[in-house]
Image (cartoon, rainbow, N blue to C red; front, side, top):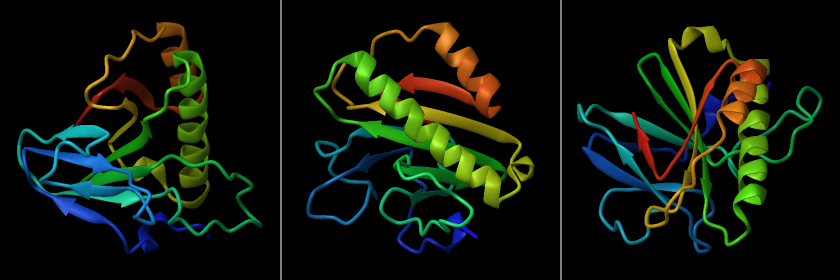
Length: 164
């Protein structure tokens, strides 16, 4: 079984805002509360409740007998009965390329989660494709968002902020 809940390198924050970062000196994506210059995306937590960020990429041990996916999203924020899949993008590739790649990473991760956990235990299920904080995110076609919902059962947002 591929178990998202056995990842021990998670971060927790109850700040109103915190960031998600990726750095070559770290083994995985991580949560940061202090240095917003390093944030790839800002997480907005208006009620300042505890939020757990579980890094998936480079941390999830995949049971290859059950799950044949290799490219995963950066992480998941889990709290109460809410599930937020997150793919961070900090690339200079064209918009269409990073959008396609990011959506595939999210779909792969959602597929593995559904294969190994009861997603119905979560009342709210969303996915974010989040681009670097200081960059403008182009408008995404509603057809892509509708197709994502039909394929995954999860609403897709493309933004530089992740609201939880």
